Amino acid sequence: MVSVLVNDPISAFKFYTEVLNFQKFMYMPEGQLAIVVSPEEPDSVTLLLEPRGDDFAKTFQETAYGMKLPVIIMGVDDVEKEYERLKKLDVVFIKTPTKNDWGTEAIFDDTCGNYIQIHQDL
Image (cartoon, rainbow, N blue to C red; front, side, top):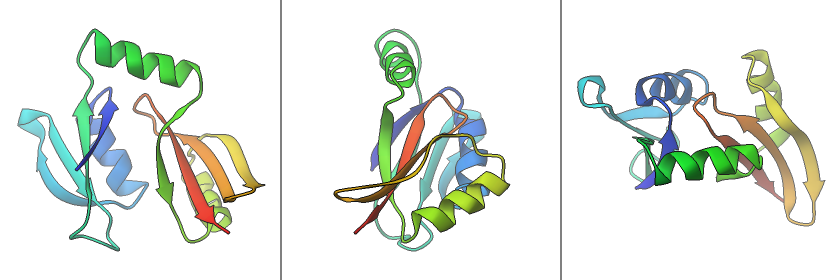
């Protein structure tokens, strides 16, 4: 399980499932518990959309966001295709698809207090 701090797990669950196409693994809104998984590998790593709370976690998240640092990198088969799909869903990108020595990357706002990087290997 990998944890991503979010402002609101319920809103995050909606974004991660309806926009990013993750699948529900466990969802208990009354307990602020939202865990999603990749539809391509439903028996693999899960992503806990963890309420950030106060103090350290809030400071960490706000600092990373202010520095425009992605909190997680997600591999995709085709960054350009995923970029176009997400743009049509009004996802805001702070970095359009860019090639580098390792592949192609783009960075977007997850609407939950984080920047997420998508990456395609060479």
